Length: 378
Image (cartoon, rainbow, N blue to C red):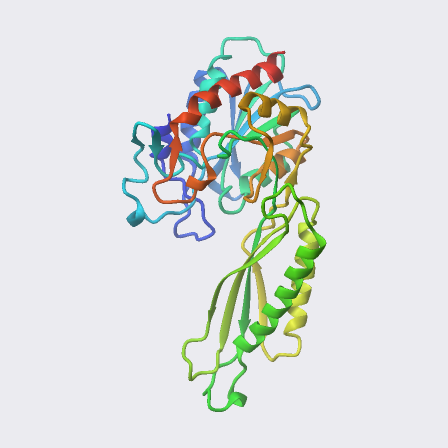
């Protein structure tokens, strides 16, 4: 199964020239789930017939507050540079200890594990539904997760998102958003500053405002459950000007903001934009601000929650936190106790020669079978 999933390109990107459909991946999953007796539903994304979610249910119809378990994952991958790979990214490479291929770890590898666990219950009578959800565009816009919330489905009491956590249950992660700050000035000969309006001078004022806000956020917000216990703001990429003897006519800065649980993404973004606009209010430049996608809110569920503790006991791993974002907020919004837990390591994700360690596969299947037994039968 993993070989077929890896073999179907499903890159998602905000750049239209490299963005790909995920329908072939969804088709494979739908066929396998139908064979196991699941009732499957394709959910094309609004305005994107080449993108879809899949919801597949085994057992009684889902009813809010009546139990049930969701196993969820995304079908897309990040873009890649084939020149950095030592093997074909779309051909699964099977070694003694790992499966190599684009998405093998993050996170196509979770689906065969989930299906193998579910297969043990295909002919049994479940007292609560088992639902497998496959989403689109998690790596770019979270459009698939957002559409689940819009649709009000699936319904269950518990959800596991199978991101690679080395089988450690994750009860909280930071939010993430990315913004592009564009300043348009006017160029001219550098010998006379009055001949133009320097965009880089204006960007310097913006950066000073950002650094001040970054320090304020870090002072006011701490959470020691995280290795990096403060919110972070990374100034990751800047492009400006074209020659030292020309007044800089255009500057672009891209930032990455990661907020702690309890912080309001929308409110902080509004304050961030207010400060940026104020910084250049007296400069004769044009400012535009563009979010790469709507902010992904932080996520947290009680560390002593039933599913967190169940997975911790079965995996023999203490619950923890991560700094990367997932679709957990969206499933939690639908009313489920949500935990991020799955085989593989995030250290291998988004990397050339991505791989899923075989050592995680059997324990993951065994754990999921016990979780299904607990929440869908017992």
